Length: 542
Image 1 (cartoon, rainbow, N blue to C red):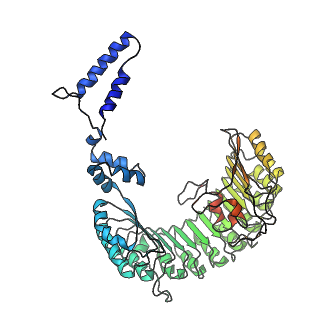
Image 2: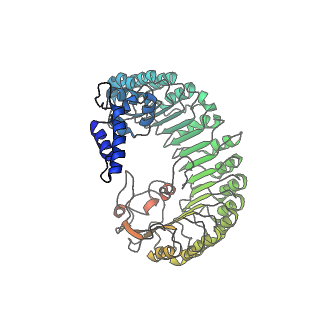
């Protein structure tokens, strides 16, 4: 990997002039100096290898800037690079099949500094067992993060051995595993530094028995708990209540009544700042308990049909620090103007508001616009009552607004005309599935506000009849939806481009195969609505 003789020849060639005699003399002088520095005692020009002179620490720092594939390629250069690359790799992902056991000694002899480990197994394959996990834990005692996916052969015995060997673990995530409550308690009882816990589809031998999870030694250090798709999620109640320093709580699609857990948290001193509740059995009683969450800044309330305006009003009146609010009302009409008016009246720090399937009017929107002076990001999706009057209200009242998304609402070009001069800080506007909006809007905003980025979905040809439900399900339309045309307007480019709207991601499919109401089916619409505006992190910024 050093400088070859051809490189030196190229260097001397560039130093050789082609013009005046004066330049020729000067460059010839410099060339002589360079070559003299490269000559050894016998007068022979050496093939210098500057890379080999780099200290191991410098080479290790360079490897950190490379992708995993590039690091693998670089490790093939020499034995020294192979050694340094292995010693400097802290993150490792392995195919956790049963055959991994025989390769553990060689793998972790090379990668002896791993602190973040992911073990993933194909659901159709046999995963690694307790012996393999125990061997890994003995060689990776400094492990701080562990992620397990579909490791169904692991039992509480293996998890106990792992937890005893890796007591410094800070982040633990498992999905589709079968070590049950006993295995989870083993981690909580031995890993006293655990800060983040994520559990999805956990199964075990004694699932029918209501054995509590936690609190354990980890309760004092836990800051984030995320539970997904658990039919025995209530077992985690003691852990959630006992985690005194918990700041983030995410409960998604977990069976059971969660009002009692929220009430027990509210009954003690807590520092919860972020709460996600999705498809849970939670009522206004649980929301009212959240009035005792004084530090609450972020609230996601997704498809909880038993929650009404009463609970939203209670949260608004007591949680003055609320910055981000996402509500998917599932078109139940239980959350509407009354709740939003209270939000506008009491939550002056609100910066981000996402409302899906919530029917509002200009009265409640005006309350938010007039009182929430810091509101920068707003999304209104699938509302039957949002029309041109409401859009004009947003344009004239939301002075601080920077990003706006309107989807599936009965609006037209006339309502968006106000954005030609309204919302002076607006940098991006996205309009999807709004039949009354045409390409005229893009032309208008391009002419009036050249710096404004417009993402416009022109749906002039669509299947008749949109399903009114925002829930999951199969196809409900009799016709076929044609791929809409997206018009991008950028002030820097100053041109409009029309492309087919084909979603990205591993599960992407052309829009001609989409059913029902576009992004309303399947995953949370809020995440899809702003996925291109998001920079990542727990703050979920646009």
